[in-house]
Image (cartoon, rainbow, N blue to C red; front, side, top):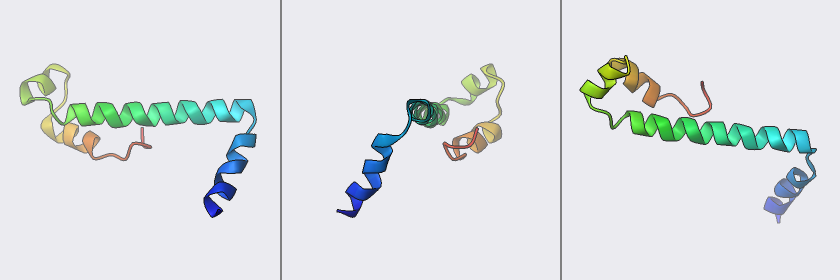
Length: 67
């Protein structure tokens, strides 16, 4: 029951705010996916994109909500 009380107000969000929320979720999802792919790159490919292993590791371990 408490879950419904939390979710129901979200249905009444204005269109602009709802759009912002969807865009934010899409961005966070993209960051998560690309950071996961980054951790699988070989040192050679990291050099090709201009990153060191240390820089790539730092990026991989960033929370998805941080740019």
